[in-house]
Image (cartoon, rainbow, N blue to C red; front, side, top):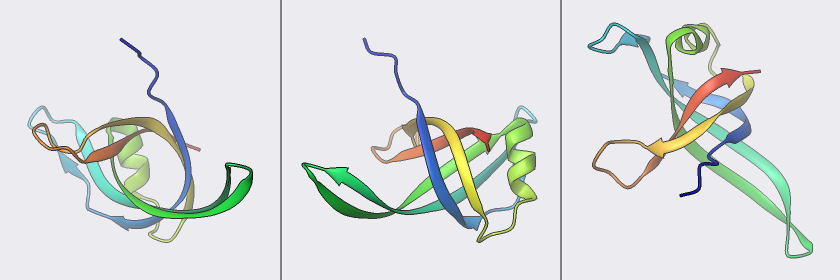
Length: 97
């Protein structure tokens, strides 16, 4: 089974919830990332715009809670289901550059 699941996304912090804690006491925060760029595809340029739900835990969540909405970020992480039984995905942010 393939194991590669890494994502780096330059985005604007479009929305951010308040810092919360999991039942295990780990800091967590949900947010929405907005991305816009031009990407090469099939020999041409394609305008890409999208929003992606994201979540961060522990120290990354604490850092994200102090970043103003509207700020530009480079987020690194991986994709996983947003909800355990759902089909939509969310980015799990493991680093903010």
